[in-house]
Length: 420
Image: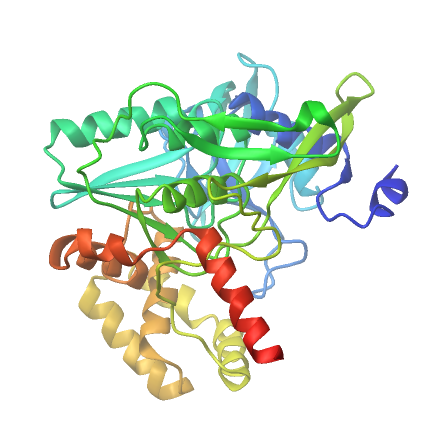
């Protein structure tokens, strides 16, 4: 099955083993039975020589893991008496997930010496899809993925913004790999009043469809709106970004998106234990453009600092020296001034950009605490979005924004001019 589907030469058509089918089912259903922990597990022993235990990236709020007081950075070393360092990630997940109401017994290691048992009772865990907060009078909404719960959770966020008197909105689609097509259409309908959101075209007549925004938009047309995208924004994220750009509803900031303009259908096998994904159509934005392998360009490109090959060697040296984790371990609550001082020290020692180092230090700090909804101090793309909404003439900016069709036509004209 794997060989047959790989032979199609399509990167998005693939056989799904049991764990992959399970993960996909969690996304499409929006929930699963589990303990509510985001986790990671190294394949090999850690650089410091410690066994490859499971590390908690973050507990999901109001879940068994969160209520038990498990913290980011905690290590899970045993599950139901079984040593975890010899298990694969799939095996770990199969032991943590399962029937709601059943107990899971863990041994947690915190820091160098503290070890303690925790008994969790599995519950229905909703796949986290949104984060939101106010930035002064600007509503900030980050979408993590597109599931059946994304639209109602986004509605909750917008209701909160309205109650707090928001005057503008930032929709953050960065590193959102996509999800359900219907969810993307529903999200777009929160910001535009009727009209085309996306269409799909295929050799199969039944897969040729046009999707429209339905009902009244939740966000008024006079609320200025910026959408953040980057190279990790793909598929359903690009449907939303493309619709809002082509409809003249939002100004795009960041980097060109990934460029996945195809639609997959999932076909279960073996009583839904395994299955396969098959590309069945391409999607087109409201201006009738397919962005597959092209991506969506932002109206204003803002990039994080790049680093050269020499920088990469220095960065590798720094990572292997374990200095940033060591600093955060010694000062878990380091403030901005302490982080800046340490970044400047590392900059002198390794000849690396201090702003890059500050971001790495902050990322490490967020890994061992509950990460904030946004980080305006180190996020240059978010800084630019806030600046646009607070300081610039937004209607004039929107006048300069072009549809994807116009941009592709101009690019084609430029190519013809060079060729002639």
